[in-house]
View 1 (tube, rainbow, N blue to C red):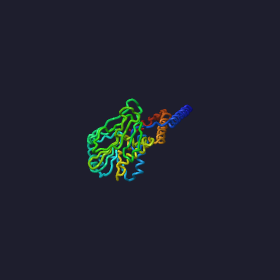
View 2: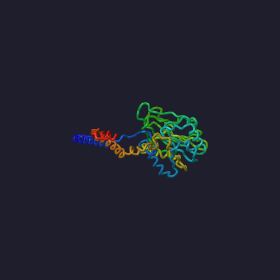
View 3: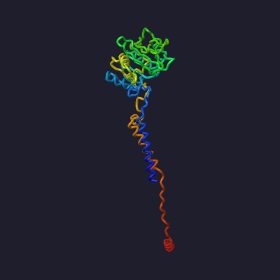
View 4: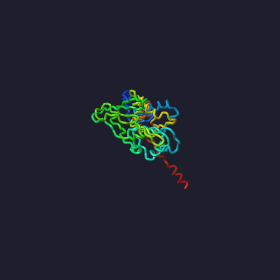
Length: 313
């Protein structure tokens, strides 16, 4: 019986070791989740951009983890408020607070694949979507119109459609950049505004429909870094730049202490090995053993004590 236990234990250890070897050497699957979190290294994280602007802007950069409404209500802020995410759903009170803040002479930069309708209606702007109907491999070309940045061109291949601004008020709004489908032979193959600046009160609002320009994958792809730098140049001169970390699709903070182990490959497998070891112990050592037989003392002869008791009576 004891020999069989050793054999089973050895086979289990070989099986677990083989599984761990295969898991450790197989190609790691790329996480394409649209995160936009500054600490994430995945393609749609923004760690590269955060490192670049931290080095360039230093103490002028302030990353905020609170909602805009709460931040603007409690603190005195001056400068540029920067938002970029796949979708930013500003509540009515937040949008009103931001617009009031911009009207006082500040700047708002917002990059989102879809701009909220309330903001577009307030600015008198319409947005439409361009897409390639005959193929599944569209290539979008981004250009900046500023004369000193006219060579900053970028290509984006990981989208099937893009929003653009179809109607603007030319008296208050200026087109800063365009997007075009480079491999489309239809009428859609025309430059469309995707980056604009509009005057609002004493301040200005910058809108872009290309938030991917700030992601790790975009910046490291080809010569796209120049395009991202060109966009950032429109607000890099401000004394204070507030980088939003509240409206992000990915998690910005670790919600559980176990994420410290699970986010690191070595810690994760150490944790799994501990669980496997406990399971093996339960299987081989935790089996039910024979219950001990209790010792029952024999009955003693009480006749003499009984006789003495009767005699005393």
